[in-house]
Length: 149
Figure 1 (cartoon, one colour):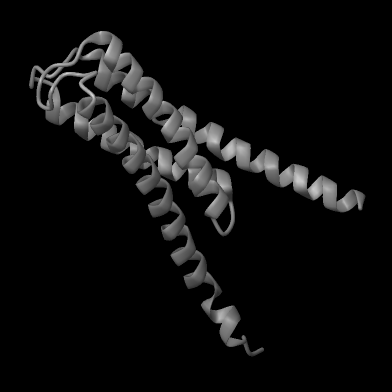
Figure 2 (cartoon, rainbow, N blue to C red):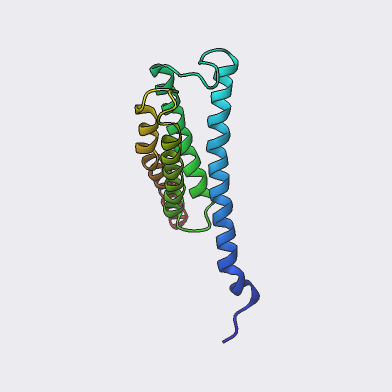
């Protein structure tokens, strides 16, 4: 049995699309997080870069980073060639690893309380799951709608 060229290339196309989905989602989270950070600094609402931030501002940063993580995971799941939840959770795991590395790198830096990096670690995977779940629900809804018509 001979496989066509498109069938032979399908796994590599899926891997490429998977990588692009992950990169697009991660870039979304990075750009939104850094853009918000820099915007808050630019208008003088937060401490200058490199200075400790107060708890209320860190709580705000935790909140918007969690929301951006959810959005990024949804984007990963939306762009994934297959298995949207798996892709979203892989993105969340990458976020978890980055959060752990960030906590280790800044633990004794005096830039803020320890609850902040710990919260980023704890909150890395739940928004990824929610982003993947939203995409799965969307796909189920589309499937149900197409079978009704």
